[in-house]
Length: 285
Image (cartoon, rainbow, N blue to C red; front, side, top):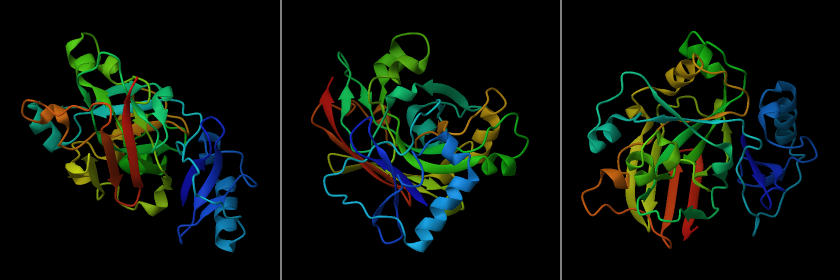
């Protein structure tokens, strides 16, 4: 299923995109798309049954904002330097273990919402990423099979980053990762049954129409199953938590000087095969 949330910010309602591309209203069946729903197999079953029966009312998508496909996210866990080609372009050694950092849940915005360039920023960068959405509480998972069984679905994430704040201002990466609007998510949460192999997805990103990133999750140093298993050794993952699993080569940081960092007026578009496409215009904060 392709689950999403539509409407003005803070007042989104749950919806489903059916096999014919028609937007369907879920508000008569479930209150929202969130962790409790993803952990409730009976509620998900009711959605599937209604979709199969063709009983869900259609929504007019014209002019309707698409919000983040997940409400009340608990935490956004991020994995750094998780693609062989990205490590090479930045001159970094591939990590022996996953690099883990966090984004605040309030960085998450809709897939077509405006991204704000922070004040005094000169090194705002783009990163297309596969987001993993947790569907069952995960603690100390033992195997890759067990890890994948705890995944509810997948989505497109844009891990916007400010490289000066991240690398040159001391401390951890968090200062360059948590600026307002720095995690567009969506358009859909695609349930895991529609993604049989998360290591066979193509990722692309364009800036002002120019292709910048063209990668595949097959290049991940630590595949999705290992990322989920590994993270569960250090923290409890709850339904509705999100893991951003890293970005392939092609970010501005890895380009020759002068590096083409983002500015107000730039347009970024990104997509992952089967998971949909995003588009954001940048404006000054």
